[in-house]
Length: 168
Image 1 (cartoon, helix red, strand yellow):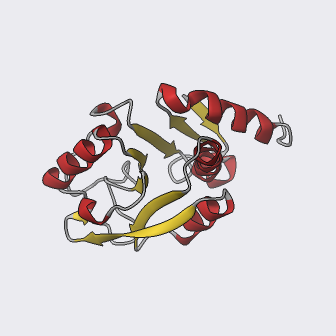
Image 2: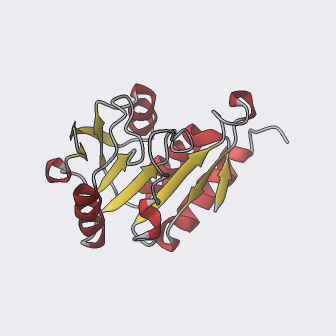
Image 3: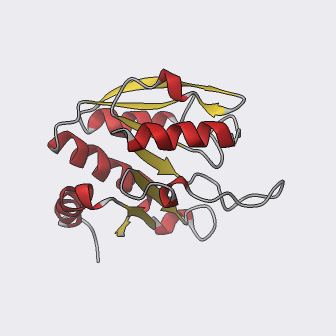
């Protein structure tokens, strides 16, 4: 678990770790959050859009080795990744892909029971990204990454370099 200054720093750390590991592109949900695209682009990744429909991320539209998605509450549509698509995405990851699961707004679930994280289904192929910005305090900038062992050294190195310029 890597504690970071909000989900945005976590995404930036991941982007740099992926580039240092030889990854050159990432798929993100389209539509999705523009700042996420900008952070990943700035890290050096070619950002590609992946279709979203009424069932969530269309796994058949993935073209990169990595995908950033919001399965519990897609932003901005609000759609939840369907059970069938969750299975497809986990199979895609187990076949060699890497999923960055942004648990965007999952704690704000009033219309159904909370969903289990994808990360629990394939912990070696899914990075879990979370934050308390909306529930605790946006100005606190507190987030976390749960990273597979294959990425931990690169993410920890990126975090150490970022923290040289952070306040205590």
